[in-house]
Length: 428
RNA sequence: GUGAUCGUAGCUCAGUUGGUCAGAGCGCCAGGUUGUGGCCCCGGAGGUCGGGGGUUCAAGUCCCCUCGGUCACCCCA
Image 1: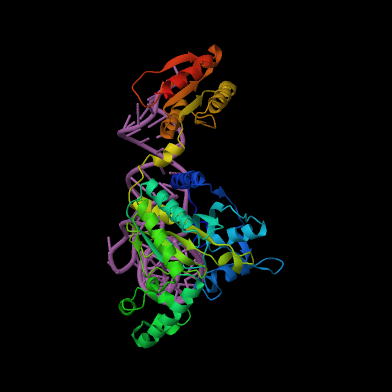
Image 2: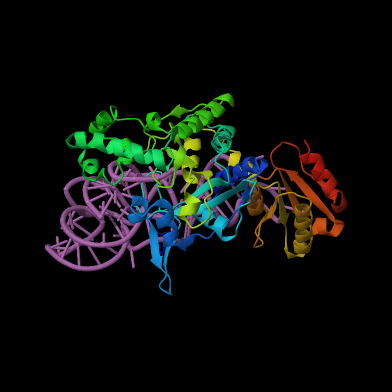
């Protein structure tokens, strides 16, 4: 075993699996572009403060899961644990705010969590996401949630649930937390050990607990939804109605309390029902009206979401939306060129390059192997035809065309007729 | 961070109570066809049995440590 292998919790994504990711990313780009989102690329590491201020310093993600390190100048850096904070930082840093215009950005980025890996959870994974900044209009929530749902739906994904909830704004949530704390004080001894010890830290998290005792207690707890201020209530009603009007199916989940402090009002999450693992959330997001200000910018409301690529791949595979040929359709050899004896090198080279320039996927065998060996390689490459160029063909300035996927017999044709012949074959 | 489980060729795995146990299938390379793939036949390359230490006349097999994989908890995409 080679002593050098990928670090714990990381993975090399190789073909053909990488082909699925190409498709997922390409498809995402296509969909969000139509809505005016443009790519933003931010660094994989940032000053730790960006995350402690954005996500919240007592959040578990920040306290124990952040991949932190000191750089050579002693700066405290962190590999980004999520995608939003960096985009917001860039938004502030480059003054991208425009009075009457919504700033829209999408990204595809690696993200890091220093945790023990398990099914559907790595130390490095990749997220596709987008952020829209500049208005508190619920129509923007509808657009963002709708884009995420459209994306998943257009992939052919069906077996998932869109859960949605409102966290209220900072004010009405504060009031609710007081109420919830009073409730939890009364039921403290009924809660599981984990939460009963620390619910004061973030009482909302108790809604997340899967332990039966906590589920029981929380079923009688006050509901955030019922204690929203009028404005937040209206906002939420507009969002859900808008999604309904567009035909999106969702469930309102009182228990959906997302992990980051910055979320306000709309929060949502996509959970795959095709995944049997403990990690079935394929994506999530929400509104974060206080985040830009918390990071030192001018108060600007915003909404966004992130989707875990690896989990999306797991979920989509579990649903069987891919056919075996999906990834190879992205990169399969059309034509395989075979050369016999070194005298044919020049002709092979010219044919290979001219066919590639004409748009075909072309490969060849290297290392002067036997015709038999080259044909075997050609066969395995999946190419539809092999072109054989030996001394005879060089002499006559021709190529021998051998169909590999049909019973048609091979034929010889002049090189100047090659492109014409190929377009004949491939237009079928 | 805690717990469980696994670690033998590129891949999937077999190796009986420690004693020809260094193997199979697939893959790869080559030959069977002096210029013809797929099927078939034949041959070949490739492993300090994750690493280190210990017990023993003898360790892939038992013990300890360590490193990795997998899964679960915590938490999250």
